Structures are given as structure tokens and as C-alpha cells.
Image 1 (spheres, one colour):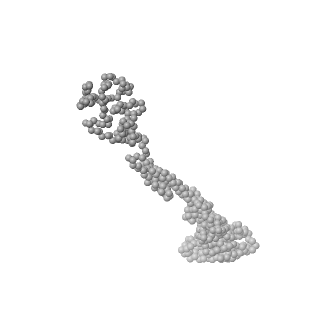
Image 2: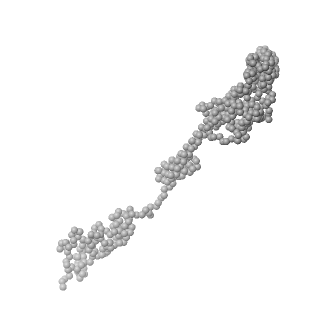
Image 3: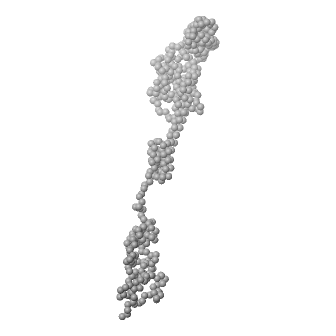
Length: 477
């Protein structure tokens, strides 16, 4: 029996074979059969048992496994996965084409068993839920909410400002609420445009009379500015009282009881640009505007009953354009109603009547300008008034003498002409009075002759068919 070689099992101590390094796998291009003979183990040598691959040397403590990082690069994650998951490398077969390593040999370099568990999942394949990050929702911008709320409550300027601020903040802070901010801005702009158009419409309507259309008036009534020259009317029921401004009137025939009669219209001087001149300006100019209208409409002022005065209806700012910018001159009695028309113009008079009224008109106008003070207090005023009366009386005498009197009015007409020289002399005496006492006596004498001429005038009027002042055809009701 041959002697056991060094390192055999019979030798109780490990031999040199035990200190040899583990056999290395030859390169892939050289199979194990081509190893040099010197390195091959003897044919009759007993096999040496390799220690298990997963058993560390007795004198080296086992190293703690490195922490597993599932998000590490693929190479590191796959290499660390078996240790972290507790798998044995030898339990996974090598990839196809690789030779089977000898028992106890290490795997080829660069090869590792496929990873399992979380290590097998690459970061790109991880689901959307990431437990390590808490989800923080974006806040809604408060300015955007305020913009929408103020826009819905018709605060358009505020909504517009808040909306613009909100859009700037949302862009910088990456907040929510852009839709609300945009809605607030749009509604704010629309509100401002609507308000501007409404304001312009009201201003234009207020200035030019093109405002809202009038509401329907009482049944049978017409707007005040639809009254024409010669119309008799009463204020419409519920639209005002006689003598006041009214919006609606009820036209009636002049033969029926009525409060007012229109004498005509007079244009109002507009403000610069054709706008409304203002109520104060109209009131100041109305009397002067209507005086010639009355003079033409009522040539015979004796035909005007007591209680009837001169008035006018004028436009307000809102009815400026609709009224045509004119004042309506009216004859009205606030307290009583009258029958018959007061119109005595050239269209209603005969030639003799018209000639008579034109002859006496200057003297009647001068007589109305009598001084308000007593003769002793205003002697100069009475002397000036007497001069005017003397001239008007002389003119009246000349015009009366030129009238072609009708047969029935010739005698009273000639008698009236014959009394005028004495009246002219009396008024001249007032002008030439030497002292206050003589002035007072001359004024009393001239006024007496003027009163006496009233009887002569009534006789001529009766003969011509004019009013004598009693108004027999005018019945107050």
C-alpha cells in the first residue's frame, strides 16, 4: 500500500493542498481540458472538498449586508437585491450559453442572478403612488374669489382691479383660481361698459331731451308740448293743477268751460352747442318772449276777462328736444273756468275793428305805465309820463280820423276824434306845471279826461261789435 501523500485524509494535519487558492475558472476560450499538465491534479489524488460558497472563514466574522436601495442604478440594485432579499446565488441558473461552473466555483464576473422583490422594480416602473412624498394641493387665490364675488354683486370697478391682481399673483405663485379671475375681469369690463353706455344715454337724453320715451298719459290727454295756438284746454286729471306745470292736458272746444288757452309759441335761446339753457334762464326770458305773442293774439285787451293772466309752459331738461326748444304762451285762470275764445288777432277782426284797435293800442299801453308813487313824491316821473301820454293821444286822434267808419259807427267815432285835442292840451299842462301844486291839479284834470273817454270808447266798440268790457258772452262757471 502506497504511502499517503501530503495532505491526504489519513494525515491528520492539512497539507499543502489545503493552502492552495481555489481553482479559478479558465477563460471562456480555453476549456478545462487544455490546461497545462503540470497544473492538473494527479489522477489518483482524492477529491478535495471545497467549502460551501456561503460559509465564511472561521476566523472572519460575517459582514453585515449593505442597506438595500431600490432607487440605486440598475447595476447596483441588481447586485444588492439577492443579499437584501435573502436569495442564494446558486439557486438561479446561469444565462444560456454560459458553461456550468464547477461545484463550489464562483459565478462568472459581471453575472448576477435576477433580482426579485422591490429590487426587481426599476424606478421608472414604480407606480404613481409615492409614499415617501406627501401631496400638497395648490391653494386658491383669494383675489380671484373676491373678483368673481364683486363682479356678481355689480361692483364692476372693484372686480376688474381684483381680477387683474389675481392673474398676476396666480402666475407668480402657481395658485389656482385663474378661471375665477378671468371671469371677474370679463364681468367687470362688461359692467363698466354697460354703466358707461347707460350714463352717456342718460346725459344725452337729459341734455337734448332724447331721454326715455314718455309713459302713456291719461285717456284722452295729450302731452303739454302738443298744444297749438288757439287750443283751449284743462290740465289732465292727475297730472297737475291749473296754473302749474303739467305733463298732460285735455283739449276741449273753447265754447266749453276751460282754464287755459294757448296764444302761441316762442323759441328759447339754447345754450352753447344747442343744449338745454337751464330753468333759470328760461324763467328770466319767458316774459319778454311771450309779450309779442300776446300782443299779436289779443289785440283787444278789453276782451280778456278779469282773473285771466298771462302764463307759459316751458320744457324741462328731459323734454328739451321733444318740445322743439320753445315756450308755449298761454292765457289762463287758475281759479275759474271761462267760455269762449280770447283770440282777437287779424284773422278774426274786420278792417274797421282792426283799424280801431291799432289806433288806440299805443295810448292804452302808455296809460298802463303810470308812476307808482304819488305826484308829490315823484314829480319828475309824472312830467315824463305826461309827455308820453300827450304824444300817444295825438297819434290816436290822427289814426282815428283816418278810419273808414261803418255807417253805424261813424257818429261815435267822429265824437271820439273831436275830444282828443283837449286831452292833448291837458297832458301838455302837466309837463309845463310851475310847482308841485299846479302839477297835481294838472295831473287830476288829465286823468279825468282819460276816464271820460272810456264812455266814448264803449260807444265806438259797441258800434263796431267789439267787447265793451262787460263780457256778456263770457260766462264764469
